[in-house]
Image 1 (tube, rainbow, N blue to C red):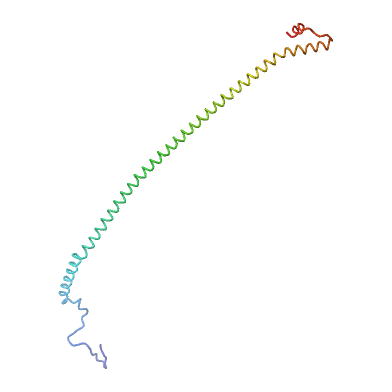
Image 2 (cartoon, rainbow, N blue to C red; image 1 turned 180 degrees about the vertical axis):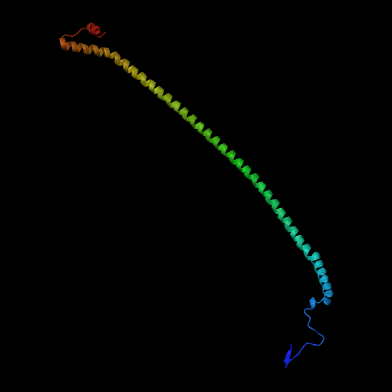
Amino acid sequence: MATENHGTVESTEAPGHESGGLPQLQFQHWGGQIVWLLLIFAVLYVVLSKGLLPRVSGAIDERGAKIAGDIADARRLKDEAEVQARAAATEVAEARAKAQKTAADAKAKATAQAAERQAKEEAVLAEKLAAAEASIQAARDEAMSHVRTVAEETAGAIVEKLTGKAASADELKAALA
């Protein structure tokens, strides 16, 4: 520090030490600094290359191997899942086809049974119809056989009522013939 005394400046520094800046930047000190730099670099290089970097490299290699293994497992599982999905799709398609075939068979069987029942019912109805027609025909034939007799009796009653005399059976038959 400098103190001022009526125009004179005094320095508090020791004689022989001039102020020349930072000692690191002076050329006379660079030799020692370079030696220490190389020595520290060599020590750090050896410590890092022999101790720390192999561990880090090993961890990186292990991690890479684990990742590669996991990717291979994932691909294998994906392939297995795709195979299982295709198998399941095939099973579903087969089950669907089987169900459709079963439904078609059941429908055909039901249709055949319905047709068989319908044929039986139609046969029963045809028998009843034939019996009814036969009965009607018999009743008609019987009624027709009586028509002549009824006509003869009616004609005789009309003739008797109109003429007052009864007509003979031969006359009535001749009139109705």
